[in-house]
Image (cartoon, one colour):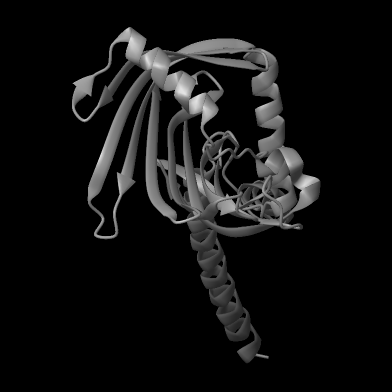
Length: 275
């Protein structure tokens, strides 16, 4: 009978110790979550309220913050962003500077032409006015530019066109390759794999902005090379020229072409400015 008060005293001491440990744990939880979610977090006291708060508020927010987005969602959001942009942007003008070079086997420049243009885009109509042409370091006259353009229209030239993968998603298979920075912005890197081998489709990698789902950059080559082309690589870089309006600031092409006994390695770099 005398040992019972001692036992109660010991149990009471353990209860106090456990209570202090619980309070310490609560203080740690309060500190962690008040720092992570300062706008919505109120300090936890104890008991069932703490479990309810953690499961009902903090965990859903944490899960939402770390939600894994699917490849299909990225593609659909990127396409929606482009469609919304087209409804807002109906026409624009800009300046373009095109540098075209022919490269020999030793990677030396054998020919270089610099062309400055003003670009007019009105709905689906596209027009270019040539402002200046420099060949072999000398500027051409207005008459020489006109003759040059007329000659180019008569000669056989490499023509190619394609649709961007997200606008033709039924013709592609998409894979989320990785997440990485591109042009200083966090991006999803999506691989576009054509379902058919045609000239109008691209085997491409596309960097999609994680916040705005704009297409920041694309690098690719035609699924099937156009006539007279042995290989071709295209690179397009877009920039936000106005709020939620992303347009090309750089287009780069490397082409290896062959026609009968003639072989050409062509590098073309076009930069756009003053939208």
